[in-house]
Image (cartoon, rainbow, N blue to C red; front, top):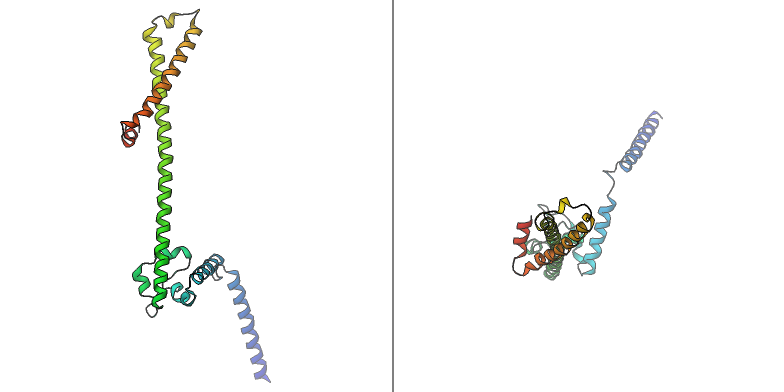
Length: 204
């Protein structure tokens, strides 16, 4: 009777601690499986199955070890990082290796084309900003020099005028705006003769 009672106590102790450990594991985020990782794994399995590699999902997705080869692919985007040497070492049929090599090559080409397109867009944006900056600097240079020339050199009595000061300022400002616009267009058109990199270094 005492032996049965002791066995019941031990069993209850094990059950309680087992349940507590299970709750602790559920409460600890580090022990719970990552939802994001599960989603990537599911997407990877679907991606490989859609391309005829459903028989080779495990070797492709498992991490390589001393005893078993693997590619460690856990996301469809990882396929482009697989080299032909890595694929050749996988324990999968030769036909499946060819399919995986083709997928990796196509993924690298798509990534290369995307980067090239992003680079071209960046160059266009940079060229537009450089042109706007050149025109703005040209406008400010032409307008400033025109106003200074008219007020200091052309009309030496400008600062002594009182009655017609406002009309003079309006005329000088209008001429400076016109000359500033002409200078901006001339500097922008100088791109025919002066390369972009020289203008960028000069204006930087």
